[in-house]
Length: 173
Image (cartoon, rainbow, N blue to C red; front, side, top):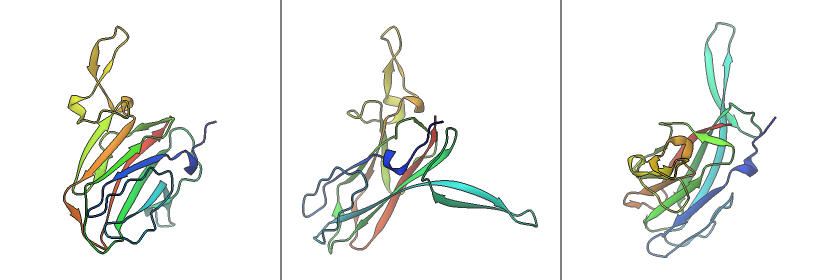
């Protein structure tokens, strides 16, 4: 039986925060620098747990995905906050899809962002422009099963003290 732990959650972040240029590759690290345009990150992997009370009312609650078995859908969320005292711009977040998972179609979210995908971690594009090679070496349209990375490009500036979230759901294979 395969299990997925939070250590398997590998995220990378590329940020150029205005006015100070800032770039960071991250696993579960966060920036604690308090300079203009500094971005603080928080990465969370959760699962939804359904409970039913005595009256039959179903409640869904998110809990940390410390361990999960194949077939489990995990919700990966990155919260980014401008902890500086000036607006931050050019914020780009790249998430590597965890090994042994498949992106859930239609689950990617991010307010005020342009979302693109990659099948190799190098070239990012909208889904209709991504291709992979078939067994004969011919280019064919990529599907969510082919995606390896997701990129969110935040539009405009994130005001000082403000935060936003991006994320996706993936099913453990």
